[in-house]
Length: 224
Image 1 (cartoon, rainbow, N blue to C red):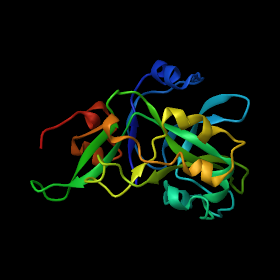
Image 2: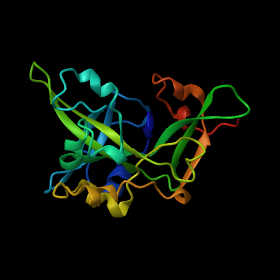
Image 3: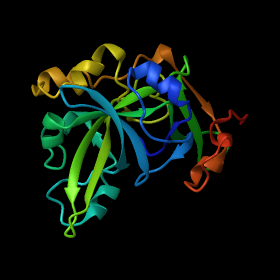
Image 4: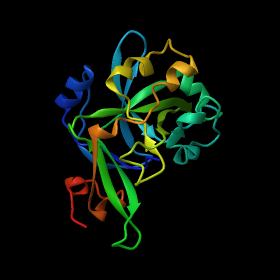
């Protein structure tokens, strides 16, 4: 699964990587947690744009928005079958922007699990495969929310966790974002583990264990 991630790079890095402008103020995030706002890249068929959504997908039919607290991830193998995700998988796909994510792993030296930070060796930002929904409260308030699609681990992640978020490769971004593509077989081809040779993972401070800690120290390598 993916329960915490970061987006620490500046606006210019994001705009250069995804060829789209950010039209609002933002600041670096070092420890993004579920229910918080995340940056998403959308394509409506005429233009691409970046918006902020709530992390934790709320299906449009949900009577209570709290269901989103449990729907932060969606398994790639079942997104076209699960009632919570199948409509979004065909109609409302996005990239959830990040430059790293956290996972917790067991070690022989310490009790419990230690946090690891996983990123691209290039340090560039990337997009998780995302699904999104628009939910209306009884009072008429619109809430846009999203979930991160996960898949089987690559060789790097195999010893860390049995799942990993889908990092969409550049060659597949257009396919995933294209609203005219609805064929599950074509879309499932995008949802593959990212090449492990392009990624790295290292231990970081246990500060990241608390969502209240959102500062640079969360992604600094530490010795174990």
